[in-house]
Amino acid sequence: MIYKLLLIDIGGTNMRHAITSSDSNEITNICKTAFTDMDEFEEKLKDLIDNHGIDILIASVAGPKVNNSISMTNRNYVFDGDEISDKFNLKDCYLLNDWEAIAYSHDFIKDSIESIKRGMSFNRNTLYLGPGTGLGAAISIDNKTVLSTEIGNTTNSTKYLMENFNIESEDLISLEDVISGSAISSIYKLKTDLSISSEEILEKYKQEESISVEVIDTFIKSLAELLSDLALTFNTGNGILLAGSLMRSLYPMIDKDNFYKSFLNNKKEIHKDMLDLVSIGVITKKRTPLYGNLSFYKKLKK
Image (cartoon, rainbow, N blue to C red; front, side, top):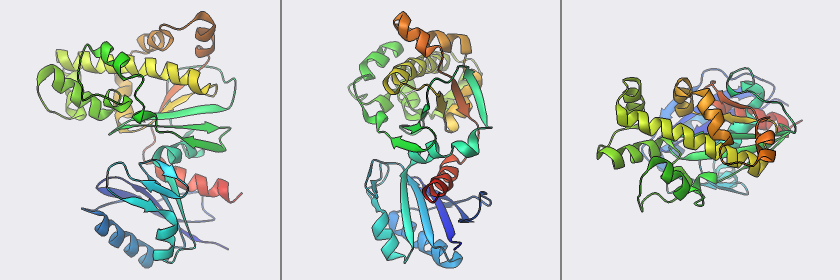
């Protein structure tokens, strides 16, 4: 039987969505719908479901996933798949952490990768990671099993990375407080007392404004050092893939030789040999969570 699928990727103020069928491998007409609160979100979700005769909902949401429920990081809202399924009379509702979805998108993005560092595969573990509003990551094993993480909310590496930026602040606690788009803005403010977005800082970088250059170059160095630790933690023999709009913007600014040196920095020779094999790339395809949602469903039904 062929079912009508609604794929959605939910942010704090909008959702991207696309409609496809269970027998399709394509996504077309990706749309973006804004909402002011979660009551309005549910109203717009209901309209989509009713107007298009949706049978199955697959949603990616930023937040820790427990069973089929996700507590959103950017809203005071618990997205419960079973409750949504009952409320809107769906056949099924599947929930994925947003980075879990990105890791499932491999079959759709494998031809949309720019290389930072080439390598040689020695197992089937791939790390997907991206600094955005926060810092998200997931591990894919053999392109079949995906483990979502809450790496951005860990705290052990924060002080070490703050030393790279030569800053001190009691407000920077978790890893995503120093490795994220929001972190770029926070660190720039600590150095200049100016509140501007990471996008504006990247523009200033292009104009060679000194503080922007210092912040962005140090951010890239710190990202390389973090990836090195995570490569050892998760034994990422199938490489590391970076995703998100910030990484797509940062990619042209990365000095690959310096990145490579930072990636191997302070590691034992035996581990340098292993890290030397780990490839690192940037996913250039947009809307990857929606593709991951579809891929997840396809793998589930195989």
